Image 1 (cartoon, rainbow, N blue to C red):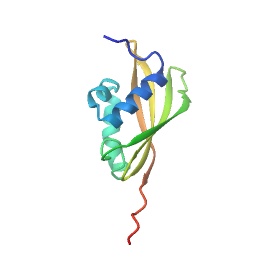
Image 2: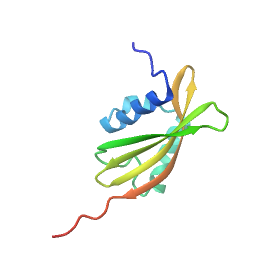
Image 3: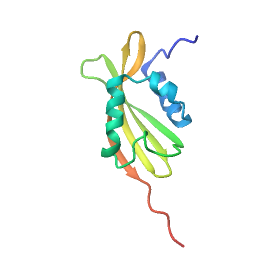
Image 4: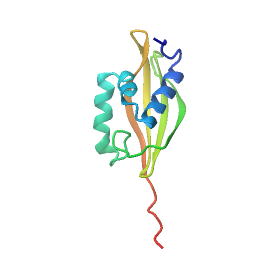
Length: 119
């Protein structure tokens, strides 16, 4: 068995790549029950543009959003891209029993794809 990621950034990269690849077992292994609940509730607020509802996610962009106020966790903005648009989430990662886990998720933005040109 391979050890988990050494840094929150490595864990965030692995998780975003798992979302794109459709590796839901890895996604579920990386998220706490509380953060999963937040993710599921996000769909309505995002107008169908949350990673749980976006079809055929084709890529992602990950950027550092700084440490949490208490210094215990690290935040990242991850933007998922699909044919229907882009959704940017802020994921808070923290060590839980020696492993990096997503402990909080909020929607930063949801942008539908522009309508296809007729012609």
